[in-house]
Length: 320
Image (cartoon, rainbow, N blue to C red; front, top):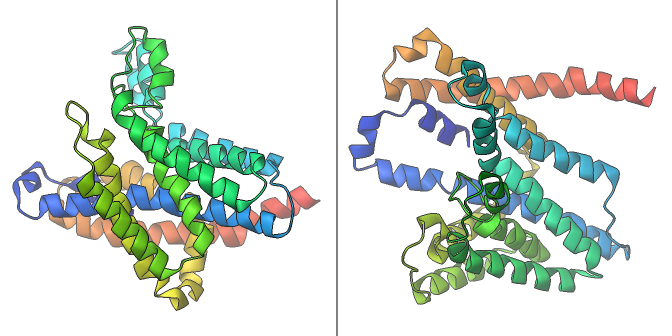
């Protein structure tokens, strides 16, 4: 994720003409599907633990607050302060465009909320997996149709933007919800390598059997989803075969603080490094390679300070 954002922030327009650019750009495009799949996997694992205890899934206050926070962060990170302060456009037009830009965090929050409601309705994991698969397939199947759902009223786009990218949504629920839903389903097998490989093979077979739908944006194509799902599952199989690595303290620390790391690394890149004169005078290649270790070390350092000095004080005051 850090490499992808460093590359996007400092890339040179001339790089797009090089032979390696499409390959690296394609690999970086697997970050978001993996991110959504992993979040769904964690959610599915948590729901199964509730059912294994013989309990019903509850939608507690803490869960709702956490999802609302993630949803709000998705919009806060793209707050158009410059456009509003500059006054070059009307406040309403900027507001509508901002709300239509569905960030990955906002998509994630809504997707996890949908799975949580689904878990509350279902009595066991089998019912949940069946309905999650149905919703996942439906989100992929409806994505091409959703691109034609247009309205003249600009405010109606605030609803339709969650179904397609015609209004500027980066991660509409159709089809991105499918990655979250299937991640929750694959949590059923608790990281079995064979299941991931079989799922990747099934996705690859479906990719070749399903025809391409003409007249639709590339991200709405079923092939777009299936191709990336295949790679995500293969990556999952690779990491599942290296299970001892999950015991490393560094990886556990990163996993527990993933949301904060996401926010911090974006601020280091786009609010700090991009505004430094030294980086403005560098070549794009140098800026990318230098920004990578700085962003990685800076993000981990800030989160370490927060977890060791700030969070304990907040918890102590809250308990008092």
